[in-house]
Amino acid sequence: MQLDAALPIVPLAKVPAIAAAAESLGFAALWSQETQHDPFLPHALIAEHTTRLQMGTGIAVSFARSPATLAYTAWDLAAQSNGRFLLGLGTQVKAHIERRFGLPWPASVTGQLREQIQVMRALWDTWQTGAPLNFRGDYYKITLMSPFFNPGPLPPVVYERMQPAAGLPIYIAGVNTGLARLAGELCEGFHVHPFHTPRYLRTVILPAIASGAEKSGRPASRVTLATSVFAATNPTEREFCRQQISFYASTPSYRPVLDLHGWTEVGERLSALAARGQWADMPALISDEMLSEFLTEAATPTELAAALRERYAPASGPTLAHRLTLYLPFQPGERDAWWADLLRALP
Image 1: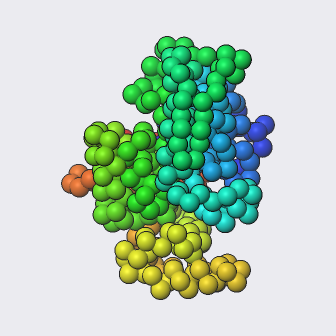
Image 2 (image 1 turned 90 degrees about the horizontal axis):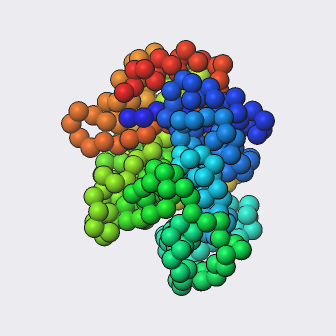
Image 3 (image 1 turned 45 degrees about the vertical axis):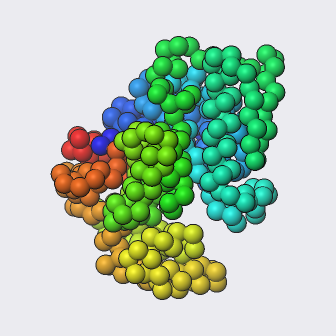
């Protein structure tokens, strides 16, 4: 397993130092998120201040953007990084698309995301090979690409570095089976939401990815599992994770994770508390039994590495993660020795 890092929520001016430190310590990739800042802007700086580190959006909200806008931005970042950029997309939930971005929620989430991916790959193929652009779907009609708007091909060495992706590597995120199947069908990677349990990944997500891969006639092993994980090495981190799990568990669309374990009623109670804004009351509903299903705990980095390997890449049973990112963002200068020990112990 590779260990990636999560970019903390910081101004752009702080990104170069964080990126250089992440590369120096030995992280495999640095992922940005879309919360308080644009998820793409940091990657121009990450690319400029590193030479080996991969970088990606984990995630950018797909339905907040047109596929053409996504295609242009990702193409430029792939060029800037010499092929190290990974385009990670997520759909978000209906309330955020409608009330935070002011855009319509699609009639079919997987249908529109599938077309967004297909449009981007059609554009990339046109730019790289000169193939005619003629995409006509249920959500998008993209047929115009005059030379004035064509950024042209990436250098062959850069383009080849990203293959066998049809253009740039695309990872999509999800909790439920529809998006997992779509990842298996079309994508190079699947961002596993931190709100998961090993049982849910084994019995729900992996079979869905395999089903999508079978539809496309390719092996499920083509899909990289980039798994965000809750981990703790002290009581403060443990309770922080309990709080975050209670927040995610209150989301109705994430309910299948709880349903699998027989915790449906807990999810309903959490949703009711969230609707009333009683956030402080929610962590108490996450019992220690529930917490142990979501959280990997250990006292030292070496012990944590062993626990993560046992949980996500056991000697017997399916691999549940090819890339790991701890839920806690990486901050250089804070616990650098701790991170270094974890990086040494994990492979």
